[in-house]
Structures are given as C-alpha cells and as structure tokens.
Image 1 (cartoon, rainbow, N blue to C red):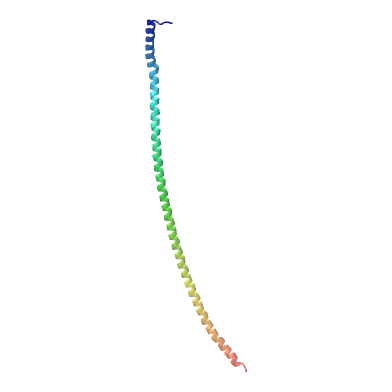
Image 2 (tube, one colour):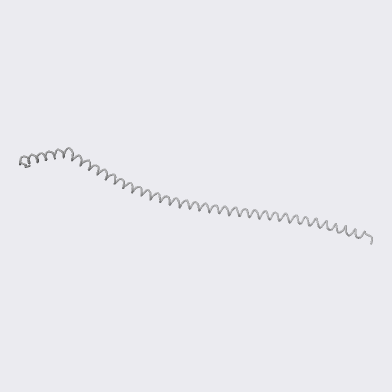
Length: 141
C-alpha cells in the first residue's frame, strides 16, 4: 500500500488535531489528577512523618514524666518508711519507759510488802518466842 503526500499530510493534520483535542479533553485532566494525587500522597506522607515525630516526642516526654513519678514515688515511699521507723522507735521507747515505770512501781510495792511482812513476822516471832519460853518454863522438869 502506497501513501500519497496528500494522505500523509491529511493523516499528520488529523494526528495534530486529534492530539490537541485529546490533550485538552483527556491528557491534561489525567495529568492534573495524577499531579494532584501525587501532592496529596506527598502531603499525607509528610503529615505521617510529622505525626510519627510528634508521637516519638510525646513518648519521650511520657517516659521522662514516668521516670520522674517513679523517683518521686520511691522518695515518698522512703520518707514513709523512715517516718514509720521513727514512730516505731518512739513507740518502743515509750513502751520501754512505761515498762520500766511499771517495774519500778511493782518493785516498790513488793519491797513495801516485804517490809510489812517482815515487821509483822518479827512481831509474831517475838510473840512465839515468848510463848515457847513460857511453855518451856511452865513445864515441870
């Protein structure tokens, strides 16, 4: 099949007209949609990167705050433990002092009872000695 110059010119002209028609109707819109999608994707990726960085920053802040709270809790626990030990020492010392006072009081009462009993026994012993001596002297030998 042979082509004439007029056919080639006619086909080239049709190609150019069809190219510009399709370019305005299809290609430009298609390329604009692809370009818009590319910008949206790039924007979404940039936003995702920013969100990841923000999440990492917030995670870091959270860990710092958590570590600080743990230190504060440990310090508070230590303070409570020291306070409890101090109260325990005070209670033990108070109990020891009370026990010492009670023991001193009991010893004083026992000593008073011993003295009272000795006095009573001394008087009764003297009376018994007199009775024994009287009984011995009254007895006929």
